[in-house]
View 1 (tube, one colour):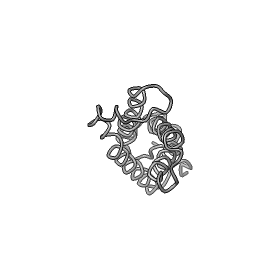
View 2 (cartoon, rainbow, N blue to C red):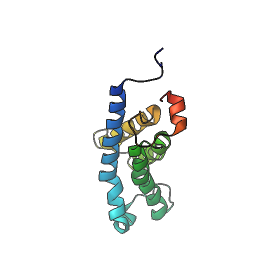
View 3 (spheres, rainbow, N blue to C red):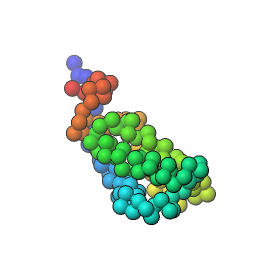
View 4 (cartoon, one colour):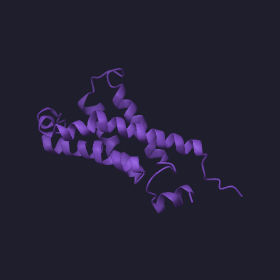
Length: 140
């Protein structure tokens, strides 16, 4: 009997492509510049909750550098998407609430990508496989 929870290979390919492209875009456009220009970023990062530049920049770096690396590997993908979603929501709703859809389209598209991955998980094409994910998805 065919496993009802298994998915066709094209779904796994699509999830891998979504993980790869979303993470590379986030790393290239937002994450790596924050690391390579840390001091400069401290002077210009928005501080919507009055926590100070370090407490605003460090969670952004975690969400935009560390989390995408986990997602690329397919390790704790759903959990790693949550900080990214949080940072994107803060950026779109609190830092840039005056942006039109056109001005914020990159942020909204990233939010769509990482929310989709949080809902679906990484698919089977991943370097690391956590047993809990396999059990919940019926993967072997």
